[in-house]
Length: 104
Image 1 (tube, rainbow, N blue to C red):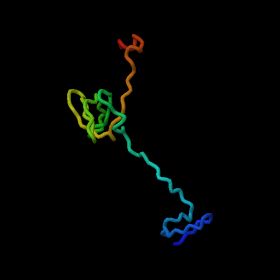
Image 2: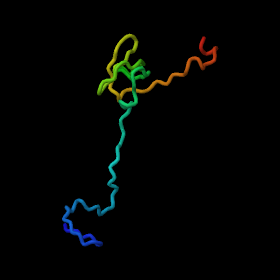
Image 3: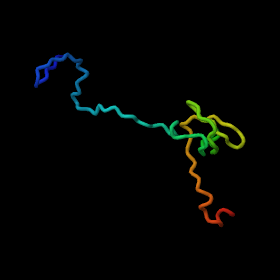
Image 4: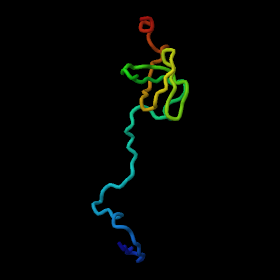
């Protein structure tokens, strides 16, 4: 298809499928549909959790970051878990809790 620019009469030959006749949204967007954490959200020493194969929640400390997995020390065992299965553990500061809760 031949196209002529109105202002300077420049001519282009472009394929027909380049023309957006329906004015559809053609923006390229990133659809972050993954669950879990991204590699940049985890560091060594973080407390994380995951579900094992029996859907039991396990918690532990990150001891190593690998390109596709995280090594976690959990219950005196080491687990290699993909980032997409992890969730952050947010634990309260034990010193900020009232003494009645700490002892109970």
